[in-house]
Length: 140
Image 1 (spheres, rainbow, N blue to C red):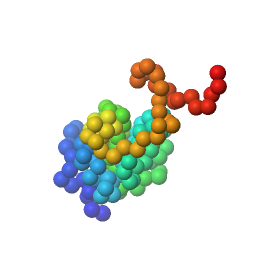
Image 2: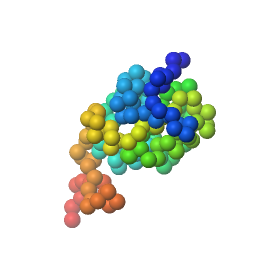
Image 3: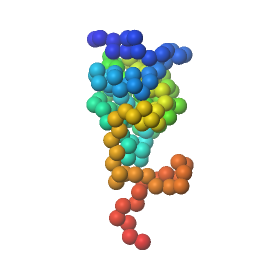
């Protein structure tokens, strides 16, 4: 199998990191993008590219058996702070080609890369710590 990561990314402490633009390019070449965000966030705004897998952090390891250990995977979270830890879990389980997307979904969106928005799944709340799903059709 061709190494799709060759000449891409920066390796830091044994983990490959990719920019959102590199990730976009690689996903269009067949790399799988694993969205680690909770579905409360990914249902509202999602990566709008092929080969996206939604494996939220809570229960991420349950999906290992679904994946080909020879496949190419880039993991992304909301801000790029936790995805490296999950890449390490994959490497520890024998995955050969796993990397992290720097900056997460925030940088992906900031770079103007494709995003799919479902306004019916928009979150409500005064700040990020209080965001919750919109209450649809609920009468008071």
